[in-house]
Image (cartoon, rainbow over the protein chains, first blue to last red):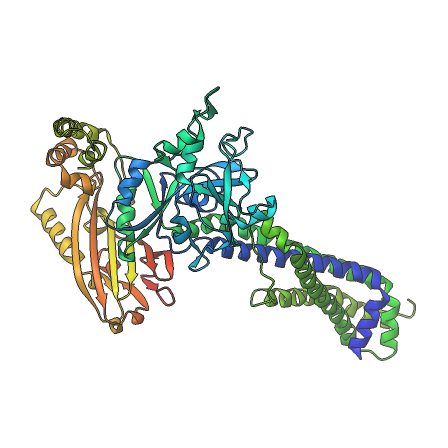
Length: 416
Length: 209
């Protein structure tokens, strides 16, 4: 009875009620969306590298090293000399080592020089290996393997020519030495998707005629001559290392960190990631806090709406009372109305979020490399939705109590 | 040692005589070079570092703790009392299962345990390779205020590693000056870091190994 009454009452004021519900829905969608992005970002970061014991680079910070070597965010402060790389590779603890050389780009994508072993050793999402969607790995000096996003965005397939640009955002290109797409990798959801992979020697080769970041004018070494040259690099950006036994990881890390000839840094990817979350955690908490504020604002808006309606519903309440409704019924009616509005708002918010996710998911993945899974509301979302309804009920008690008191007073009065 | 190896690598293909000269030259130069190399690790009194690596039934543990935490002083041991304190500390540090109490069900035994005291500036690989350099180093800052650190390495073998559900740190009871241990753990599940303090001297390992 009272439920039907509440429904009808809300319907009668559909415009203001609709606006209130919309405000709640948007705030709930925002809150859940922030949660989604937060957990999605954590998961996709954590899934980016696995089975690599150490990452070695120039001495900087562990988070910075992890970001530029694995996530291609930011740049290296320094390079690692080839000699140091050889020294580390010669350590008895080292089972495998894969060098990485960054710094050039192709369109909006970064170019990474490495060895063929990268395709065997690089693992993501709990030990999955890279797979080729098309073609094969690096064979010739001028072979390039492109990630899934590179191929999709630029429309590349096996056999296409690629010209690598010098630096990250520059107009000077290594046009004299074009590469050929030898393979296209299957989608991984990691930064590899947005990377053009070439051989370490190829990075040296395209810089043969370059000095101090600029091309030496008038000097072009023919490709045939370059092929004959010793293209052992002098420096690399970083290296991924696997150890023979897990028991030796810390020992090798200490050796590298104390390497006297060159200031190097070795980090455990998992620990660096944990460190990163400690830094990001503050911003995350702030984001969650702000979106919680938005939900609270929407609920206060609802309260204001109910307060405003009290006056215009005075007559209505008086009639209810005249027809025998108890003051508690009036109280119950107001609380129920508020709970209904919040419930509809919360459900609409969740629906909004899922609709937005379904539409934007591929775009977010392509633009930010962030895969937000479409999952049914879980242990994280359901308490939030229930919490919103609960908070709305609680908040509505304030105007409801006022209505309760008013309806008592109004009942006593002769005239209204 | 490292300088010699470098020369040997780059000197590939050079005649033996030239190689010998190059070797002599680097040998003469290396103490001077090493002198130029200055580096200091972090050193915070009260805070020790513990590294735990678990693979199958074997556990490797490395402990680095400031001298102040273990014996309460970091100056060179001058009195007989100081020396006795150091010796006693080393003896305690060589019994890992009494410092880091593991569940009895795991049936862990110590297969290796070694502890020693090092100067902060001393680098393991340098100090042991180069006698002359070591002498110079001691002469160099014997009089300066310096930091010392205890380093211990342990290898344990556990009959049933599945029973490793946690570690209790009697370490804090035995060394009243120690406040905190920064722990880095690596296992099949990946790497994680923890902080264990004097007020809650236990680490829960359920689901971590």
